[in-house]
Length: 184
Image 1: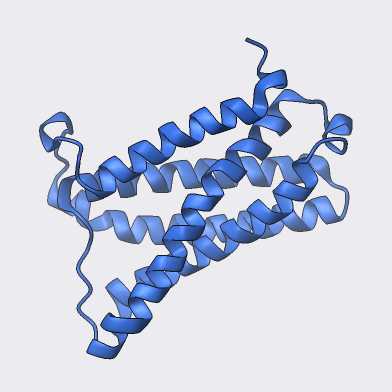
Image 2: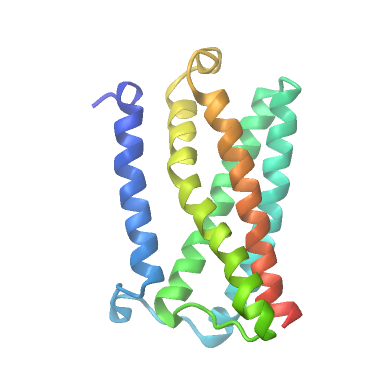
């Protein structure tokens, strides 16, 4: 199969598979017996490591965005591939921890617990889910075409949307981290 000619279909298949794994882990549908158990110190460190990965990803998205606006395609590509790698590390660690331990309970003040936290978390999750097919799509376009041909595809338009939503999602993820582990 020539991936170049089937980017939308492959995006759909990969998105369904990726989101299936995400929801299976988040809903603890993956039997924990299938997962090796890391020491508690490792499990406890994952949220903090993921916060660093998220802040770094915010930086690489901004670098990539600025680079492409200046016409520096090589730097843009490096930054966006770095963001993808950071996201993959974040997601693997997050899904591993949540599959084993479940979601972290929020223990802040009632008004924050009842309104603010669910709103921030909900928007973060929604944007993260929406970003999956968008990021896969622009990534597949970028990896299957020469740079000059990308201007003739939806890569620039979808990429702008994906980068903006990804940036907001990562930022809200850091806000969730701060609410769970720093502020309350």
